[in-house]
Image (cartoon, rainbow, N blue to C red; front, side, top):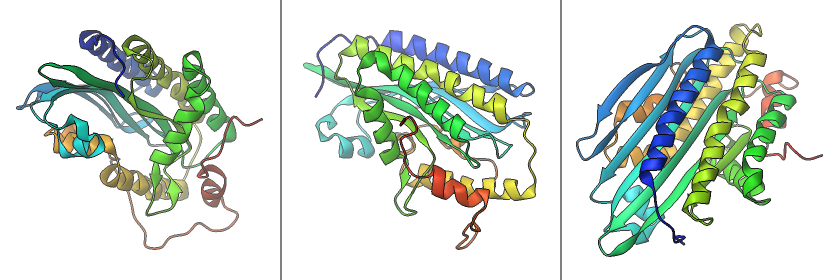
Length: 307
């Protein structure tokens, strides 16, 4: 499965550090009030990172944009279960991962990450791959926002093959699905993993295209929705739907499981969780309401670019 080519981890790390800086700067500008606070950390088993968290902003209630570069002598169980050929190898993993939880229910939550994984063994070629993507979780949907989000994602994918966007769009729909609820987490976007089929340089270029396009996709939606008026009803529905986000991240998310099993920094791993959330027993939206429309019109794994 591994494509043969030289692996330049230094170049990837340099890009990821710059990406973290660029995303933080653009989100701070969109918020207009709060600033990210940085917390540098080291991992006993090897590596470390830069966690950046923003709270109580004019737009962003809580958000985090993390860079991590960790390495270890043996693979965590979550990785060898997924790829048994990695057993007995040391590993390096680095990436930028972020989640933004706005306060205004009309501004969607968004998530993104781009990463590389490399497994080493004396006398053998490294096994490497890229992964990542981004997805959007609205509480009150707008068709034009969903189309714009997916158009931007497709534009990032198009230079790398006609099949890339539809393939990774479907993967995103399938991955960010809460099986126990029988519903998607949001309106999707892109998800890819184990990606090495184009050779190292081309795969790296693809990862950069995805990483660089995230703010192009998200910031215009923030700007369009951040000043919309809302009340207690919308806020309570947002907090209820945030519960789905928590459920997915703690039950299904590969990155969360890998981070916790590999001895990653718990505070950084769990920064993706929203600051406030509520669960309500057996709640259902009233027919004909905007809350019902989220379920019937937006949480449907649909093709937003169909003509």
